[in-house]
Image 1 (cartoon, rainbow, N blue to C red):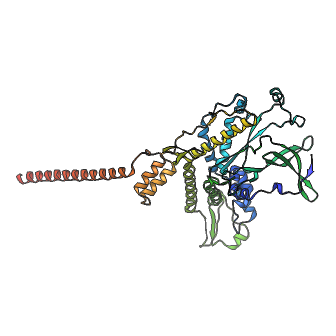
Image 2 (tube, rainbow, N blue to C red):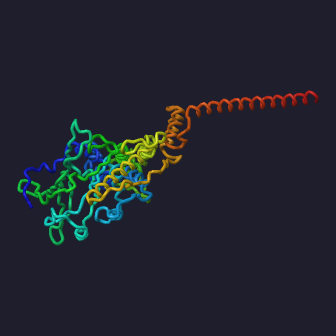
Image 3 (tube, rainbow, N blue to C red):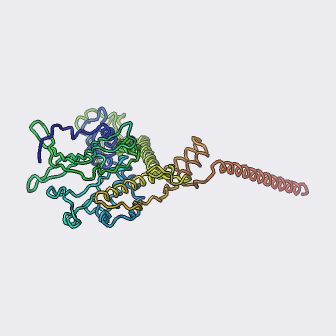
Length: 500
């Protein structure tokens, strides 16, 4: 079918999406590395008021991103996926999902990691549970097991990037405690062949409602563009098969990126690094300075610079020498870069610090005496999300959901902040500078798992004071003994002298 839609509003994002995409712009460019940051131009690297466009372009070409943000995301995801994801009691009919979740041969383990990466980058992640389409001529017919085998009937788990889910509607109201989705819109770009050798990128908008779906294709028109309906059908599940997890939830389908501070610090490093490299380029070379040189020599080009050249003049005031930078400004710039890198390392380690109550994704307390890290909390949110996705898969295939069906992502990793990490060094420096107290120092070290979580800080401080008093008493006693010994030796020497 190919009827023209009455409006282009199908492609217009909702306000909640626009709120989030403004935050995601920087994250998307950081994930695109140096190439994307350069392409963003003045958005992330402002041009100075009197800097020419050619000078700015040269500076941009020399700018290289120190990608602490992407590196941190990768390292955080490495921890839970250092071991394989375990799915307990998955029905035999769905075991193919462990080796091929989406029809492309992607393993469940890799799929789970990608879902967690979305959660860490965007603060929200989506898993869409799709099913093989039933041919039109078979709709309404009760299919046998053999029919399903012949048709290749199966479910697919799709990791939907939050950037592509541009719209949604819910039945949220003051009277509904647990609202549900009544519509979602997903933008999808596909490269399609235009000739034997050519292809072009085509935009589609997929609209899902509880009982049906409609697929729109963007086309060029005489006045601009429009969207035509190219496919539609029913959804027998009776609900929108989307499962969403949140890191920093701000509302239904709205969340804040959990590592936004790290992204801003990385931007600061990008800008400072560009300035530093630009200044360093000029400071590496000495500036030739001359005075008292006769104008005639300058006009006639008599001054030649080189290892085998000599400059002779009769002027008594003539002087020609190189002036080099003292390097003080360069050292300040270098220190600024190091300071930002230390701050990035500190912020990047925060998700590993155990400072959250041990609570499940359903809000039930597991262990009132145990804290977990934010990363562990996000891992559990992903576990619950994937479990719900598998339950939907069972529902699609009309399989009874096993009571003990479960998804287990490794989360027993401990904080691995080294003793020489910037975060701990910073805390020590703050205490040594008397900016924080010893009590705060001990409490912060407990959070970083340097000290035992059951250490009583107050008792420890009292013990430290008592030890200090004992050491002082011991020191005074030693000094008194040493003074007495010296006095005794002096008296002996005086007695020997008097006898002589």
